[in-house]
Amino acid sequence: MNKMKNYGIGLLIITILGAVIFKLTFTEERQNKMSRSITSAFGTKEGCVELRSGGKLTFRFFHVEKLSTAYGTDDDKPRNYRYGYGIRDLNLDNVLSESEKLQGKKYFEVPDFSDHVYYDASLK
Image (cartoon, rainbow, N blue to C red; front, side, top):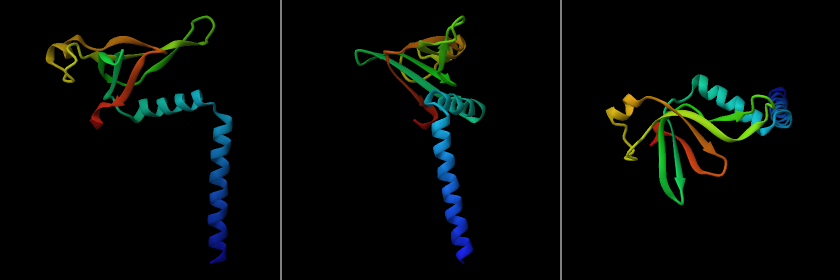
């Protein structure tokens, strides 16, 4: 019985050390990239992005897989916007009509200082 208790404590210590090492080794941006990679491989294709201006909904995009951080071509530094591809809800009625679906996915950018939200639309 004592061996089992020691085994459990050892496993707990290893798990905690692993989490601490992971947190110290990988920056938040690196953790986000890893998370997005996993989500892209196994995750949802039902994401939704809503952009607001002055509290008013101005744009909505459906079927967004992810928002990506833009990087400079020459300096490889992150830019102050994110981008993605999605189908635009032109009339903002929260329903994709056939005409909107026919438009297909469009490229869009989200400025750093914009009021936006990304969510899994399948959870609505």
